[in-house]
Amino acid sequence: MIRAYKFLLRPTVGQAIALGEMLRDHCSLYNGALQERRDAYRHPSKTSIKYGMQSEQLKDIRTFDPERQGRWSFSSQQATLRRLDKAFAAFFRRIKAGDKPGYPRFRGVNWFDTVDFPRDGDGCRLDSTPHDHVTRVRLQGVGHVRVNQHRAVLGTVKTVSVKREGRKWFVVITAEQPLPEPLPATGSDIGIDLGIASFLTDSNGTHSWGVFLTILNAKAESAGWEVMAVDPRNTSRRCPACGHTAKENRPTQEKFHCVDCGHQAHADEVGARNVLRTGLVRRNANTAWREAPPLRAGRSHEERFHAETPRSRTGQHRARARAAWNVAWA
Ligand SMILES: [Zn+2]
Image 1 (spheres, rainbow, N blue to C red):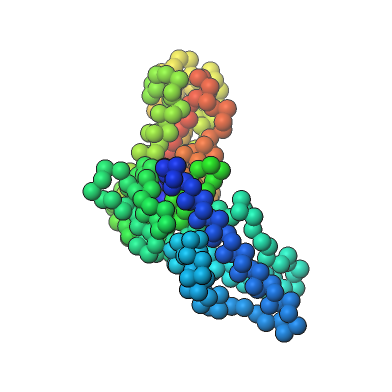
Image 2: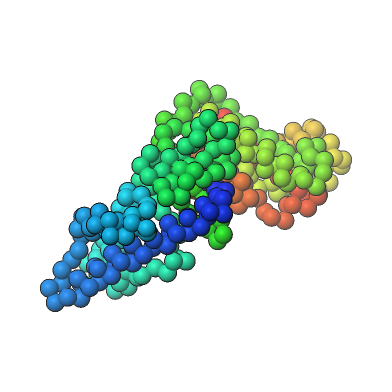
């Protein structure tokens, strides 16, 4: 299983300048290689230039331009040439399919935001100062850049990419991990009802929530279990016995008393049972979810939580949200 991590970089002023120069030079390499392909394509002979031919020129380019092209990782430059090659492959594929794609374009330096290092240890090294208490990544031509590593990287680091987003710099790491050894399925599912009233006491509530869910997700993930946040609407008003839904079913904060069938229980327990029911219904309805690996890459836990919880729930009273998680993931 390949897993990606993205961490904020904290470069010094000098390193930030060097990072900008690294992008700029990779961008001009990309554009130069594109120019060569364009010229060859326009030539009556309609020569087509391949990645291998461009990669072979790298050595001379680096020797000829030691202060710029010669300064950066050879492998990262190959990765940039490969990116161009992919753009062309897609272009020709679409022509073949009868489309009218635009010819691959030159990139302005502001539209060129990533440098890839195909292999950790080749032009880059994550955790380059293991004796130090801060994590750093060494990038050829830039130095040991501080990494804001907010969580441990598990498994073997494969690739390292540096990415600019606005004024910030990030490092994106992919790591190969063994599949988590699932804990034996217990056959049971749990619903929890997390109410602002009991769980949180101040206006930082929503934030604490995120922390709690993050920890919960991390724990579940390592055990091969699944956490699912569900829409909390009506979960405190619906009678688990007869289904009657009314706000009168909840005479006080603690009590649940169905006005239809007379069912009585603690309000939190009713909420939790309804959350579980909602979670199970949704899981069963959503086969895509079932087939996806636990905690799909690409979206953080918080993002998923927020995406599935209506934003209007941040107010004091409405700030009740619930999570259901099931322990029987299989
Ligand atoms: Zn009832």
